[in-house]
Image 1 (cartoon, helix red, strand yellow):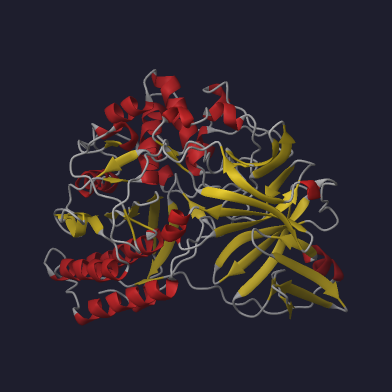
Image 2 (tube, rainbow, N blue to C red):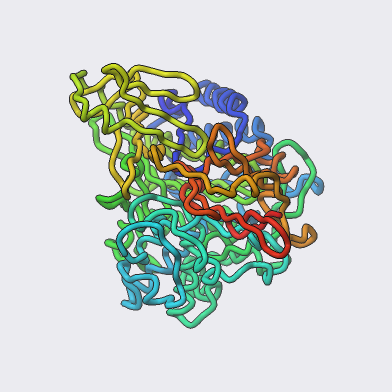
Length: 601
């Protein structure tokens, strides 16, 4: 049955936390959990109906509470055949029910297929994981502010450790493909967010580069290559590229949580990073391929298959508490005998469609959930997690537990050197943390509140049982490392004595409106950019359109900036856009602000 110990929300510091009404979400999941407890399953009858009925009821309660209009899901590995679950409508107005053949855009789940395509060329000796990108795309270049000259390689792109910007928003969702700037030309004018190998930075552009590389090596269009080498061998005949198809069989209409009216979604111009559509029936074939570990077409050798689910961190990585494979986020749970179970997941999200794929490869279990309702990706991810973990318990008969929070290390006396090591003024994406050595004490200040820190034998400071911190040297600065509830992650960089505002910045402060976008054929994430000073910090505020505010539940994204020159600054902290560059200036048309390919005037 569903285990109350696993009823919790997981926060991933490497992905944005969307503005879901969490009180409502938690209440909804809790009600669903109570329903499950009223109908306990039989652990010895995995192929029977009891557990399957529990899952159907759970999905039904959560989907109803979240106002998900249509949902199709498939679980592989709990029975002899895939289990399909369908709820609601592919088309609410026409009362067309969602079923296993209903087609949905799967967004970033496309990256799994691109990784398989890359593996095909690795197997054939046409490509190596350590190949520099420029060896296959000589036109590729990107500026860097970092020391050293490490090449960006194929494996960096696969694992999101290339340090590239996240997205190119101009022409991302459009009915006119020519609105999309050339990717290689665009990147040549941008800066890397990190040196390669140092930080997981989720980047659609990394996978778009892989698509260009596959085209160069194969001599085919990426779409044709992926169809012939991956989709066709998997027999995924109902899947294809959403932007290339005007009329799919069994399409799902697009909706948002709050409204029961359908919307038209402009096609995404992403290809290798997020261009596919599929169905639960077709995605079951991919899950079966994963469960069989690539032992049927498209064939993948065991060493390559294992790399997909192996942590990609290097010794230089800052995100010591985060694990990822080739676009898979990895988590670990433990059986009662302390044997470890690995849970891996990917998420895909457009404005109105969401997709989650989660697997426990060692236990032979996998689930895909697809829906046609915007703004619910977080709750869908939690649904997939709870189902997989419960399926592991149901099929193995063993209880699972999350890794235990480490026992607090005994306190110790700190030296002045220990205190000065952590002292600094650390800028995060949305806040500032100051750590000062005052009168023999280390004082941690955040949000206007100050706390006296304790020191421990392992060299870390703490604020009670649930928050520990330390500092590491990186690229001629200091990075604040936070450990909270067993999760360790970089938080911000020290700017003490080196936060210098450009002398003419006051000439550029103010509000700027999106420029050069025709709303008739293009939809853009942000409509307005504000460049402002607050308490001496340069900040950027990006305002969403009214429709996207309805979908995501918030109006504005707020970022602290660290100036790098008289016309450039980088987004501070280690959140969604950390390290990406914001440009400002003036030309014959007047002042402008530029970010992620968008121009505001």
